Image: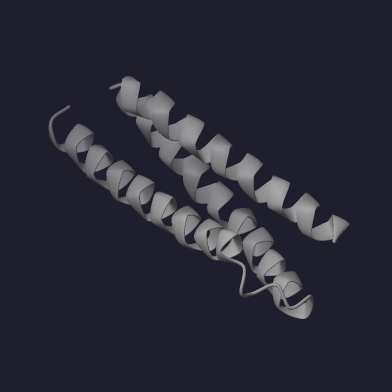
Length: 99
């Protein structure tokens, strides 16, 4: 159970770092800052989803898959990452086209 809590805290910490990068990039309209933030976002996606997958396996092993909290974590973290990815893509295209 301790490992589930540690993985959950890692997922939430990485998600908060991704959101912080998104907010920083949203307030900055500099092309270099946006492209670096987009690159960092893409680099952080792989470890984030590896940790999320490991958490999902541990939840299924411990028969906790019926708890709504874990389902919400998986759903909203994916939703947030899709939104941020679409935002970064559109903002990068806009900055490259109009710079």
